[in-house]
Length: 535
Ligand code: J2J
Image 1 (cartoon, rainbow, N blue to C red):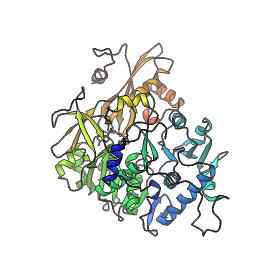
Image 2: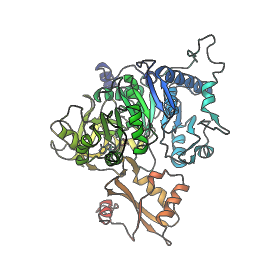
Image 3: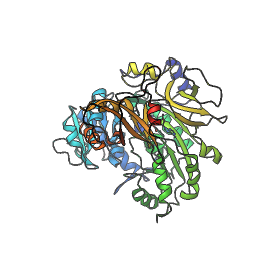
Image 4: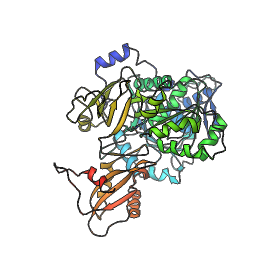
């Protein structure tokens, strides 16, 4: 695929020879499940492995009938519904790569994703969280819009799924419909994930079938998933963590049960834990904090919970230490990234390591370097930037050659921008960040992207966006503005960003007006000083 950077031949050969990579495809992830067992619970729907497989196959046929085929891209923006899972499986089966947008994304993000990926289709809910996605779709020039729900002038997902049409092989028994579509190659890009981003425009992360299958299968192994696992999804299922670390796909690979919750709110999640006897859940730190609070007054029985995975942003050791006593389950820290590398504390690690570290690399083939600002390796135990390469870490962002020169070393290590130190045990401790990004409770915001939006405001002369410490969110977003005349209020700024179609999680929490920006000796805006000025 043009715009995709493959692993160099010698690495690919080694990952295959050493068994990290197989020929299994993302679309076959249901094949190990007992057909009679429950694969997916979402709202009122309960689907067995056989039922989910059949729906995925019918939907695959529907997309194929539309003319979507191997190598195409389809932007998928669905919330935590059964349709997400069905559409994802359908697309990967026909080798069309889903581009996984988040439900919060709006025209600014979606328009760009459709353009960059040259998407053939855009799959949406009708209305979600009070937002009409069909309105957004009308502003795009994408060939097919598929709507889960009331489609209006667009194509309904239900019709796509049920109308089996003439290209289906005749004479097949019900449930065995086949349509002639080309299956992907394991080395093909299977899915595109979104990068948290540090630049003006979001980046797409190509994940091949074989690297992502390894990602999810190895994760399921390390996290002890079995056919007895009941995994509650509270994060957006389109996010790497909830999708494949081990996530929904890791559960399917082991034949377990996935339960989709609309959000991590204890009001919604706790009753589902009780009803479905959920055993595992993945959360970001603000949700973990909420659960620690809520557990003391909630009436629900959470005793089925065995493991709470916490990642996406740093989880304080003191809080991690409280989880077993308060929630009655083990905690696992996860330092992950959609770009690839995953670090997990292990289920049998001593409590001290589980509480105070962000885990160690998933794979024996993960290579880790910790370097100083000159790119030289630091002494063992010292803090530096984490660089990595391995069998499931990208070698380049999609269609971003200039950015790739900066994001990778010449020998293919990805520069994570995370500042870490490595303990003798191999566990990593996150000590900070050296990238122009705000981590707002696990949601990533590119400072440059937000600054560019703010600069488009007529009253804004210059803008600098920083993260400020927050006890719950880890960080919140503060926009320092130099204004021309009439200073806009925070409210006006938010309204402006909303009208520009910028996702709500990127809107600043606070605006500070300044006359000038402090500068570093080389003349760059000193964001450190800006943050310090707020104290
Ligand atoms: C500190 N920072 C962390 C942690 C991620 C599992 C878990 C998380 C993500 C994810 C993911 C952190 N402590 N425990 O994809 O599969 C910050 C780092 C990292 C960036 C990646 C998964 N866990 N981070 O968060 O692509 O800065 O993936 O580089 O959204 O989140 O963000 P993202």
